[in-house]
Image (cartoon, rainbow, N blue to C red; front, side):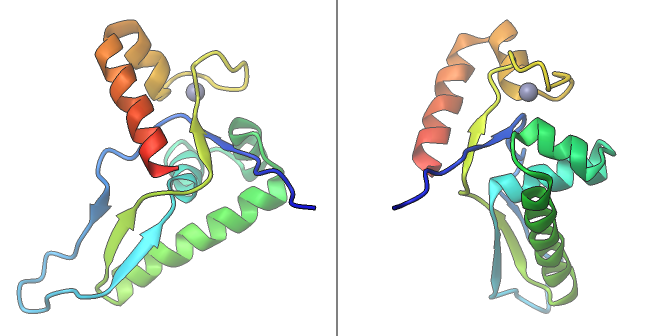
Length: 133
Ligand SMILES: [Zn+2]
C-alpha cells in the first residue's frame, strides 16, 4: 500500500527561485536543486532561529523529518558555495500556510499577509503552488 504524502506546511515562498555565483571567469554549469520545503527549514531554523522541534510543529511534520530535510538543505547550500554551483529552489512536498494555523506566528506568513492586501496575489500564489506540485 502506498503511504499518502504528508504535505509540509510552509509560510513563505523563497523571494528568488535561485542563486548563482558572481564569478565571471568561472561560468557555473552545475545546478543544485533545493526543494521549497528544504528552503523553509533553513528559513525557520537559521533565519528565524527556531529549534528543530519548533520547526517541525510549524511545518506539521515529525522532528526526525525536519532533521533530515534540514540536513539535505544545508548540504546543498554547502555544495553550491564550495563547488561554485547554481542553486535552484523549486518543487517539493509542501502546501502554503493559509494564515489560520495556531502554530504559525504569521510574522512571515505570506498568504496571510497577502490575504489582507491583495486578492489577485492570492490567485497568483495558488497558481504557482499548483504548477510546482
Ligand atoms: Zn503561516
